[in-house]
Length: 72
Image 1 (cartoon, one colour):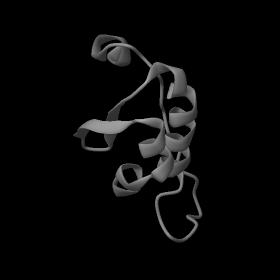
Image 2 (cartoon, rainbow, N blue to C red; image 1 turned 90 degrees about the vertical axis):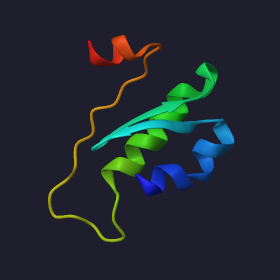
Image 3 (tube, rainbow, N blue to C red; image 1 turned 30 degrees about the horizontal axis):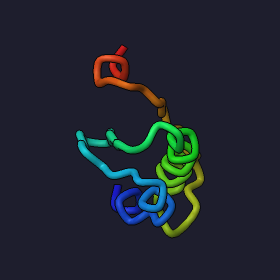
């Protein structure tokens, strides 16, 4: 979560964290760079530690317009 907040790419794209619930993040930013931001967020969340894990972490991420769409 901290890596996502500190990501230079996410900041440059204009994205910021608006909500964190346990291991879920909600970011807000411009729609035209959402796909690139989503890729960066997945990359960060799948590789969160300074060392490689023996078991890969799988991240479920999607781009939506509303909170209701996110939970559908």
